[in-house]
Length: 160
Image (cartoon, rainbow, N blue to C red; front, side):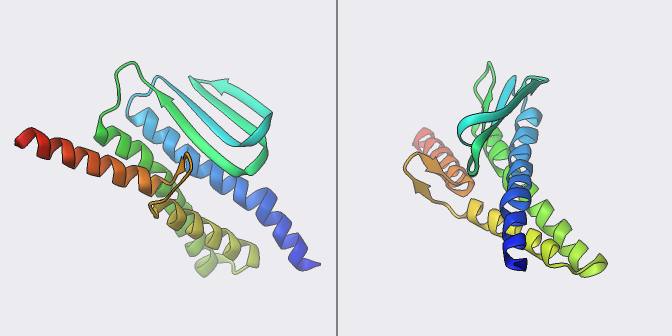
């Protein structure tokens, strides 16, 4: 029975909060780079809840564990460096949660839930930094590597 409770906590509390915090990292990066509007979408299917404030639209969909994406708009196109900053802020926020959970677990209170919170955020950090692409879905690591290679090729072509 305890495993079921822990699983439900993971699925309905830890995972959604961790994904939301990761996507908020992208929102912060976009705001720092001067995005005029941003949309944060968590999940697939019909929207369960949505709101808009300060040019940020947040949409939570029915199947909120399977997908999350942040899209940004700006009148002037983002530079490669700005895209890298925006993309890397998600994993940086995941790393922050991982470190906070690790310290809290080791210094304050050693509970299974806090340890699971640490492990999930560590997994989220690592999986987002591994460069991979499946169909149209690509990891933050893939996006960053693609941007760096494109930038390098453009500089190399311009110097010839």
